[in-house]
Image (cartoon, rainbow, N blue to C red; front, side, top):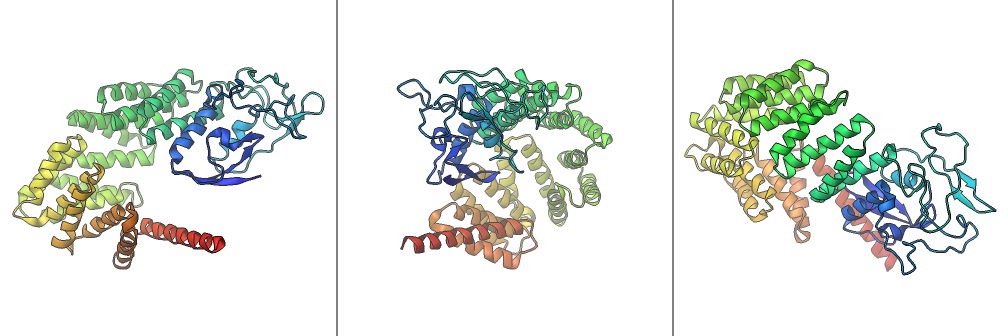
Length: 463
């Protein structure tokens, strides 16, 4: 069986057989003999097929067979027509999930022809040797809902899982409408409450973080927070509601929600999140001593937590700013307030005041933040100006290596400057090997070395 490898963001490389259970890989829209750069599109295409095979986008041939061809080999499938095999969902889904492939059994199907068995219906237990009935072998035949390739039931765990993968893949591609449509369908057809809660929650994230439709996001998160027994999704939705309160300027409402979450103590990660944002609320209100104490308490309580580095950096800025003009820390608190409320113009204006202040105590902090903002806006030229300014004006700053790392990332995206990027990474690892980004830089250098080795091997083999 021929195979090819495609890279899937967040999931590594999947080995795609040229034929999966009798279905040619090319019908899936996946390249067989080369690595396709537009992996996200193929992943979304592939998962769309898994989530709803009845609506698969395989091109319709001139004879109307939707890509199904007469086959001429000994192991014909049900009358000479090669439909999507019933176990195709399982085989394909395991390309994207860890763990061993389940055992694939084949059952007699009419005369001497064979086909691959489907997952057992809910009334059967996995592993029971009960062959499902053979489907109609005509090209347009549809299996009963939930038992065949043409229409997996909404309650199918496999169909639900692939739909969530599809929705998130579409979101990464910034196809907001497509992603929302997938999650809306999941919400509408979900049998398990946790699936419904997750679909509504992710829809709320899209509305809040991608589309800035805060009123709609609030409605969705409030719905999730009131679903009975949805597990962690209800608590996460309450946390998101606290962030929406901050965006709306309701600091007292946000504090009340966060304090309630801290008192629950049912989820350590969520409690840490709530504690970190309570410290930030004190910072927004210019209660600098209280903010410093709360950040310190958070680091002590969660020494390996998700927000340790953020809390440490906040404490460093507070300590560094205490040595300069008191106005600087007020500007810093105001900038963080605008950041959390997503008021970007006000944030940029405040950071510029810090960077241009006659007291340069926090100028390096402001320059780094300005560079990050313009990098996110894809204005790499302007972001490089700020990153270079930190290295030139404040080479001894704690934040200078961070600026160097981001500069290297920009160079890495330019094929003509990759060598410069790797030189920056090696210099940073040599001089700042204990910084949080060190592991990431080692990984990038290792991957680059592997790519170079593969290119040399290929060149030798071709020669």
